[in-house]
Length: 210
Image (cartoon, rainbow, N blue to C red):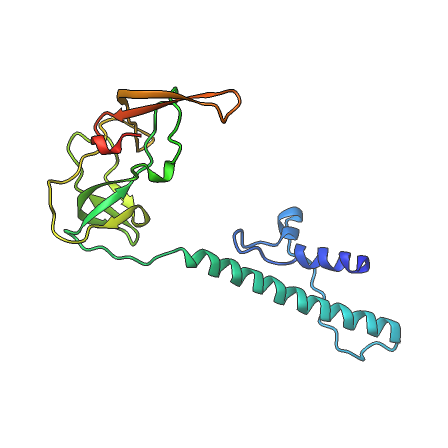
């Protein structure tokens, strides 16, 4: 198979990249790769050359099919996790945020169980095809516009007043400060042992203690 490596390299260098819109050859040398005309089997009077060129065309065809199949598989994999959601003005949604915790304290042992959604908040405007503006509290320092993937629709009647957000923010993400430390313990499963703390966070309900 080593004799096919130059052909594989050539095929890759002249294949247009889906992101840049250019071939690696053109990016390197500043000009499109030279064109190799398609070979018609039997055109060469030399049997060995005819066989080699025919195999080259077959290999090139296989490479293009493999690349197209790989691109389709990648596109399918990405789209599988995408959801087309359209919210209406006036809808109540929860917004997904990843709080910054004080670094001097150990992060929760079960981060997936910690609070990620805040709200609900009312949608006041649609910004483009994928973003929405929310009616956040006046004292909030977080940007009002969110991508639809960070929102989750509230279902059913509102049982309480709109939710609250942490007052402080860094890089458009909330900073949650510790309010009270209820208990501490040493985790001896780590080397060196790690001190764990059970903390109630300022601005969050007691059930969100971690």
